[in-house]
Length: 218
Image (cartoon, rainbow, N blue to C red; front, top):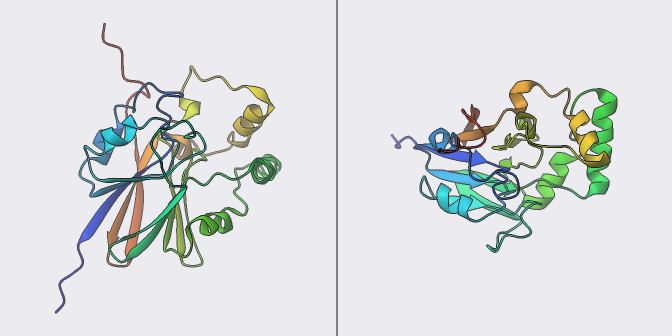
């Protein structure tokens, strides 16, 4: 009999926003990723030191987010990689404002966050894959459509949980209203875990415990 395929544990995170919002990774991120074989970061890293910190846990594959323009480290906009027998596409998931505005307006009208056209956009970025990993929206998401799992780990930084964060401008206020009906569990700071055994993929989320910011030492 053939040997059973080993299970590969992939840690997934996005939207760490270290440098532009947070001073460092939330202290709960590293324990949540302990024991993974590979880490995928779906963008909005902001500073390269985040990747070096994650590399102490496991090898890292990362892509550029829309807040990563100032990073000195060159990163691709999208990557496709084979993990076990599963083809994974990794991208940030952001679109031009002309595409995201109808999404926000539709969510306000329907009373719940919506992501119309997202699958088509993601597959244009990555090509044919079994799983698309993305971020950008700061919310947990998992849907299987047309044989493809679209998966977001949520965000390591969740601005609803940050009392120091101020929403500015019409676009910021509209986006906050768009998220107002989001279930609390989907907006909590989190990382994701994909478990891959041969062609089988299971997923889950792990809430990042503790404060967003490490407590200051007196």
